[in-house]
Image 1 (cartoon, rainbow, N blue to C red):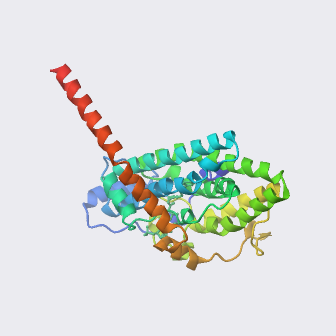
Image 2: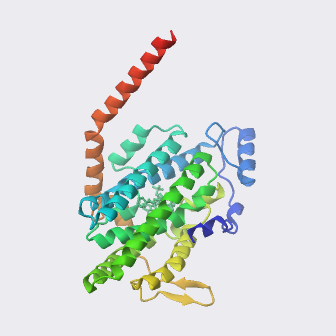
Image 3: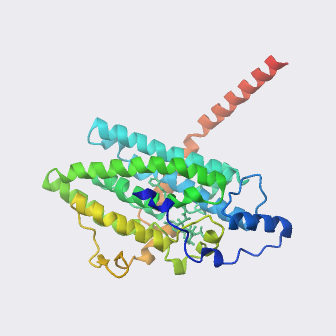
Length: 337
Ligand code: BYC
């Protein structure tokens, strides 16, 4: 179902936006523009305008940060999972998110930014990561809802990134999306089981859906009209579908899933619009979104502090790994001499 975005044409009129003017070498710029216009891929060794490079570093590093901060809300439930099976699934999922962070940091490194620089941006609070991870996971149902809705929204956003014009990012996203697909399904399945349980379990699922629904809609980013990076990102073939269009696709895909599950999506304005052939939905609280993005959500400080502590506590592991690699290298050189 989520792979539908592979077949969706790029936003109409996307290529009518002018490519960013550049003071760089006109011949190189022309070759770059031609490749973008032909939907070709840009690789690390290729010339690219500085603005394109900067945009990619911004987006990919923020995406990487989101993956590793995203390990925290669910990681909190590993020791409290209700069965061995659920614990094993959750450990695998959280570990996958760590792996996604690694692929993405590696993709961003191909653009000439070091991992230390990116992590410094995260730890100092300068870099962004997804708003969604600044909310608490209050009950076990939150873990299922994160799988179903948060990972569902993430896949909806990420499938078009498999066609991103920057090769290393696009290739990383193929594997990420396959793994996210398992994440979404395990969450939905966990909720289906709870919805066949006691009245308390059903109420717990509904409560979690009520708390996460609007935050998931905001995950797609500000409305197109207020999205400063969208037009250029789409012109460069980095983004393929706009924030609002992806949000709409997510709503349309999720409504029937909620019906099967037996939960109500907490929006009195949510209804099918025959004319548009889409669901209408209510107003997202953008003030709350920006407050959270700007560091004032319920868990921002805790999430950052946890990441900084993990980085500092892991210093000896990084040092040991480097010392081991150096020793191996010296041994190889001695043997070759
Ligand atoms: N949260 O002009 P716009 C996951 C920022 S993790 C925070 O539309 P753009 C997962 C935006 O960065 C999901 N900030 O920007 C992991 C920009 O600020 P800057 C993460 C947000 O880049 C573990 C400003 O608002 N996915 O999958 O064209 C467990 C204006 O926005 C958010 C990605 O990162 C937000 N929600 O579009 C489970 C995907 N939204 O940078 C799941 C890759 C917007 O100018 N990223 N902002 O200071 C993207 O696709 C795009 O960057 C976005 C934003 C659609 C997110």
